[in-house]
Length: 223
Image (tube, rainbow, N blue to C red):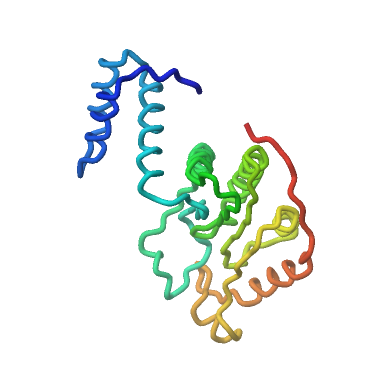
């Protein structure tokens, strides 16, 4: 959306002052600006976004790395998991993923080498989001002349030929978690039923190794 920005320097200073408070009340600020500028709420939010962007850009360097929590759920019950007491089963909606990517590319500034990590929970539980994020990001990178480096952290249990073919096609580097020898791994990395997962992870690793070396970037548009 393009909005013509009709506001005075005094208004900008007022917005800056409001945003720099310890606990800014954005709802009240939006109402105040709507009265002053006679714009829709969407127009006001666009202005606030641009001003916040300018503020952040003046204080901080460009952002070049993004880690997306695509799901809070996990298919394992590892004994030492630092997230097990707070993880739920929510998945990141695609509109939230899109907004995160739009923000990321905006805040990357003039940097051209960017990195995105698919994370969780166990990200393969939300394979649809992995595909959407990857292809939407590829499209934006091609538009903006930037290069992308994709990563994913996985326990490896759910990996199959379809997934790994996709990772190879889009050059997604997979960090696979495996805890040493079979006895050690199965002691700590168990599924929800208390069963060891070494054999399943090994199978996933074998699929990954078989696909090593494949990959290309595909220009698909996700509007």
